[in-house]
Length: 102
Image (cartoon, rainbow, N blue to C red):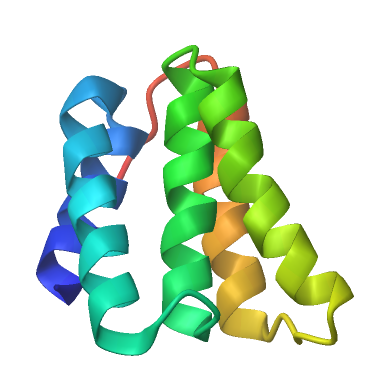
């Protein structure tokens, strides 16, 4: 699943967001089935999917994913450096208007 997640991130950074979206969804489904809704890996997948959804114009869908992560954090969950870097990685790419050199 790591390869699928990495491919989704690469596609996203290249501006191929529509191709990344189903990969992010597949990663989230896998993590939910494997670890449950509140596991750190599941929440990382939710954060990445939310950024992708927002970029594709599904703001309501993105908000649902972000609210799930926020509820976990407010319930005492801890965002470690890996989780925070995941969100920064995808959100930084979403904020850039030009293509990114890899």
